[in-house]
Image (cartoon, rainbow, N blue to C red; front, side, top):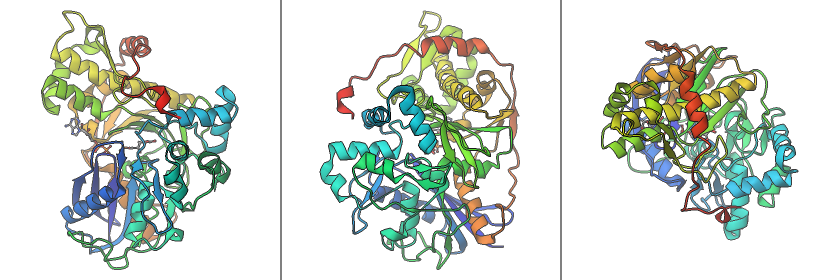
Length: 489
Ligand SMILES: Nc1ncnc2c1ncn2[C@@H]1O[C@H](COP(=O)(O)OP(=O)(O)O)[C@@H](O)[C@H]1O
Ligand SMILES: O=C(CO)[C@@H](O)[C@H](O)COP(=O)(O)O
């Protein structure tokens, strides 16, 4: 009975699960928080990983470990392997101007977007690493000059678990490499010309491993104090981006669309062919099994619930009760949830809005319902974009912290227009990483079959009027005052 560990180093926290490699049975788990903010010193992820490993009772008995992580984050290392500056995260929008510039330089407008979609499967927006590197070159040339290697959060954590044995030992995987903007899922090659276009030169980049290729072995003394006992010589899996790991964790099949409501909202499915959406709505990522992962990502998901709960001075469970006590459509009250700007649609400077206030709709219950419906409508737009790119959607599998909300679970089928399956509350990104680790440990042509038991299905008649009202409202918003377009680029 070999044991394996999976790590989810996501935006808000680090989670670790220990599972039986053959059956997938959960033995232990732990978590630790990450700091707030859209730029983070990677050492905070390392401390959180040590804390989560400790909370999970250590990993001394596991045969393999894989790390999944938030996508796109720019981790720059100097010649000695030290971090050059805090990492810019996927939800940091300061490189929006740089993204626009990169599209412009490739022909601008539809031609520029088509160029990027054909080259790397995705049109760059502020989230992508390539835009952050351009921002660095323009705004912090002294830091840019020190960059000897650039990698992603999961690459860096995997490398640290191996004992940080020199820049040449950095490893990535197809899933996470496809979110850089300088690696092509269609060809499986880096586009170093695009990396050079962004940064002005080509730093070292991690070798991209296949889905079950080991990335080395864990170094047992990789953590200093406190805690975090590590196994001696356990294999390191290649790891992957958190969304690709979630697809592995829930065991998505043909016709399944996964909707994750975490810090980001994501809508994605596993596909046999790469996507290249010139509108930019769908990112044409690779998955963690050798296939592809067309994906739509919004910047505003579970934190819309946090914000609504804070405004109403209630907890998340009470927010759900309030939302479910209001009528469908909240009598016309609409929340446009662009609290952090937005990525899909590409509105990095936008702010959120509340439309349809009347004496009747000015109640906590209406606002709670409109917040839940608003975040789901944004994801429903994502689902439309995904199916427009050829995805088949027969049902939605709902995961992420926001899926713990009874209101989200019950309102989702009305807004998304199809049955919604909710696995039991769990850490599906960490589980996907653990399943990858099991694949590395056990070998074989495919990951071991682990079943997810106890899923609940939610069905409801679609209510198109909710989406129609949202579609009218989403065009009306103000740009933020705290960052002018001139700050970008
Ligand atoms: N009972 C709940 N109801 C609604 N939202 C919840 C509940 N429990 C946790 N969450 C939300 O989960 C979010 C974190 O989700 P998670 O998927 O762990 O995020 P990430 O992976 O981006 O770090 C928090 O913003 C929180 O609002
Ligand atoms: O940028 C994307 C996907 O392209 C995000 O999905 C990040 O990968 C962060 O994920 P969470 O922390 O919200 O899980």
